[in-house]
Length: 230
Image (cartoon, rainbow, N blue to C red):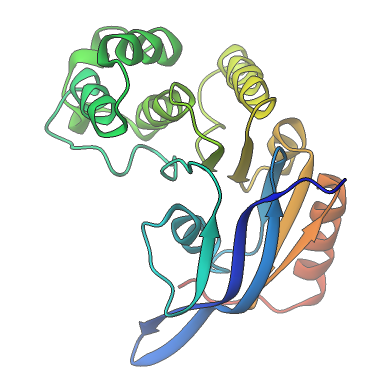
């Protein structure tokens, strides 16, 4: 039996004005994303990968079409961009816990142990490096019970031991949930993901194996001219 879709995109279009010209990043996209899979999302710079994650999360609304969600979807995890820079890491995590209605002490303890930030966990976020923010955001998402996790370039930080720990935690969550991960590091996608998505010129393709998605992406980038970012 085919597993039910956790996300369904129904003729979704999203675009932006760039230098006086409207550009469709996602164009008439219809696709069902299966539950219980760790999906690696590939595409050229400017293809709209982060935009797609924001649409799936609900932090962006499509210009037309509808997105159907069955289950809880995480915030896009990428360098803790949505956190408040004047609050400490611990204070930001307490705020997240209140928003999602979970025990704040338990989430703070989990993230403090996972992120390995030491005393910086209690320092303002403005003093964090991008890698430290990534650890904080990834830990916050992994400490919350979602049906679909959205990860944007947040796993290739820290030393080999920390990356190994991140992979193990992500795979543990995938036993009971699904995930979409964006990364320019194909080796990381192979380690984290089992299936794949490729986004190009507003269209999205699903591949049952992550290696198939990576091969399609590499073939596309070799045979097509580079596009400007936007």
